[in-house]
Amino acid sequence: MRIRPGRSTRPRTRIRPTHDTALDGFVVAVDRGRYTCAIGDRVVTAMRARELGRRGVVVGDRVAVVGDTSGDEGSLARIVRIDDRASILRRSADDDENTVEGRQERVIVANAEQLVIVSALADPPPRTGFIDRCLVAAYDADIEPLLCLTKADLAGPEEVLAYYADLDLPYVLCHPDRPLDELIEALRSRLSCLVGHSGVGKSTLVNRLSPDADRAVGVVSAIGKGRHTSTSAVALPLPGGGWVVDTPGVRSFGIAHVDPENVLHGFLDLLPASVNCSPNCDHLTTPGCGLDALVAAGGADPRRLTSYRRLLSSRTGDTRPSA
Ligand SMILES: Nc1nc2c(ncn2[C@@H]2O[C@H](COP(=O)(O)OP(=O)(O)OP(=O)(O)O)[C@@H](O)[C@H]2O)c(=O)[nH]1
Ligand SMILES: [Zn+2]
Image 1 (cartoon, rainbow, N blue to C red):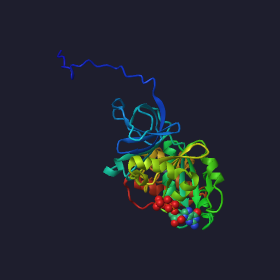
Image 2: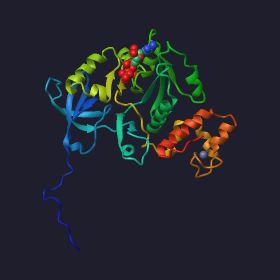
Image 3: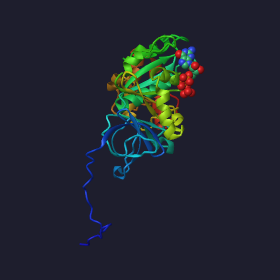
Image 4: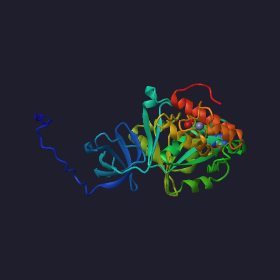
């Protein structure tokens, strides 16, 4: 038997520093290897300790921080531990898992409890395709969705709500001239992530929700030189407790990382009917699909099935027209 020479003559040790004095931090922004952490009322800039290995740190992470945690200008602390994540919200650059972009997957936020899907009722009109895509990502990540309908002064919610009538989808209406009580209540004491297309009024909403946000972002920008305030996620504190993560850079929401089986979980109104499908039904082209039967019997809105199939097709790179 041959004995392979060891890679290193240095004895390996499994002993890690215990960091008894580490403080609990919450990652509010990430920019080029620098992590902005909230530690109590302080905002501390930190880097990753080498012992974290390849593990990435993302906004929403709860971490242990050592070193200079004063938060003073020019100070730099070290993140030595990342707590287990309660949830991970991801997106792919593309829908198709067969492309390079589709395999590029990014964690948007860790530990989010709620995905707030911001959609305007008009200007721009609601895009249910985008909302459905967000619902797939939310259910896949085990994060509760909340539909946040803005610009209630311009149009009523009837049409979009009718489309979701068969789902128990929680929603709030936001009117520019009325208090945001309902939304504030839904966000209280939790970590919520906002997503929405450009122009739906997300920034307007964030400014109303977190009046101190400008100041908080100002601190963050000073560290990140303003760049990431427009490109990546930032967690902002809410006056009533809790955090809201704004995702200015998220313009699309690829779902290549979602298992095709799980896409249907974003369509809870259609899901139960799949028990009537044959075992290998792809719910797309397989004859006798239970979802077709459901719609034919008037048990679901045909537009929902069309939307599901459109998502499923882009997911698999199959561009055959559906429905
Ligand atoms: N009528 C009406 N207009 C609104 C409302 N909220 C925002 N707007 C307008 O809609 C436009 C877009 O608002 P933003 O808050 O910048 O939208 P956004 O989603 O942050 O868009 P990006 O900054 O491109 O990401 C602005 O001209 C706002 O003044 C609203 O409730 N009613
Ligand atoms: Zn089927």
